[in-house]
Amino acid sequence: MRQAGFKAELIKRSGSLTRPPILFLSGEAHRRQRAATARFFAPRVVEEQHRPLIENQADRLIDRLNQDGSAKLDAMALDLAVAVAAEIVGLTQSDRPAMARRLDAFFSVGAATREGWLARLSAFLQGQWHMLHFHFADVRPAIAARRMAPRQDVISHLIAEGYCDRDILVECFTYGAAGMVTTREFITMAGWHLLDDAALRARFLAVDRQERLGILEEILRLEPVVGYLYRSPVEDGPPLELDIRSANADPGAVGACPFNLDPDRQRADRVGGAGMSFGDGEHRCPGAGVALAEAEIFLRRLLSVPGIKLVQAPTVGWNPLVTGYELRDCRMAIDKGAV
Ligand code: HEM
Image (cartoon, rainbow, N blue to C red; front, side, top):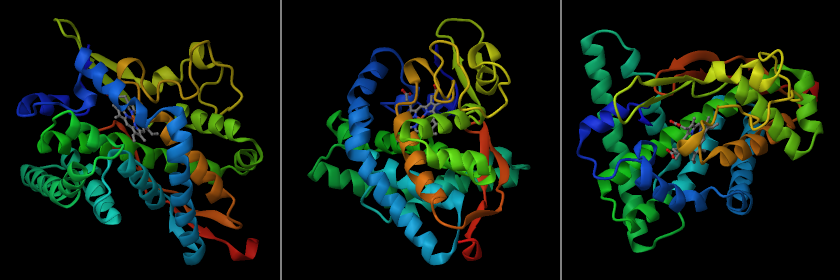
């Protein structure tokens, strides 16, 4: 089977990419890229390299929340997800908040949901503009710096493999969607559940790290960020549409009352804590450990802020690219009277 989601048809049609991004590779070429990039995601690397980075970034965000007295959870989550993924990819030569805005403008609901040809054309042109801007402001300076002094990151690896600038740009976009957009939504969703449910929040703060990760995986099982995965057969045959929400709610896999948020549920053998939310098989998300570590470290600090409360639940939109929710404007404030 071949990747058929995430606008695979556009990648195929564009034809001019010599080296398609990892998400669209298959067979031997895909195995090679997975093996070569595994070192950025290994559990020891998450623990020794990414954890200190995530802790620093989370502290920075919580300090600002304490100063301002209020914040938007989804904006904090985007800031964190972009900071961490940018470091892994090697996008470190430009102004990060500006890069986050560029990626947000590109990936947030736009072209796919607008009506009328003029609105679609305008969305298309805006998308091209953001892509160009991302190329010149963020990706090109990063490539130039890595050519001079390679580091342990995805861009340095792609340069060493002989990727041209254009192919590196598209791989950076793939990581932008795969690593930044998804993690932002997940942290916002998990934070919303925890701010909204006093008992769950108390439990989250009382247990050890392993159990906290278990609670987060259970939230992700119930609220998968990527709703569908698509595959098409190499030979003739029907395409596959994998409904992740249904798979994650299968009582045969996840036990009774599948729509309950129950961190103690008994799953069937070989069913992971997050069900199918990180996919499975050859394309299974390599960033799962990073995303869970980000959520665990950040949300633990956030929920420990004395008096932190939800002021306004987020609006729930739909992102057709990942076939999942898009949470915006989730407002929190520190209630000084409650401290
Ligand atoms: C909660 C957050 C995340 C979710 C829900 C998620 C979900 C997924 C899913 C479902 C896939 C498989 C797609 C398919 O089979 O067609 C995938 C692939 C991928 N993810 Fe994640 N992801 C998350 C975070 C991350 C992070 C933090 C990174 C990197 C910094 C990342 C990088 C990737 C990459 C590179 C792939 C493609 C792998 C391949 O094709 O072999 N993801 N992700």
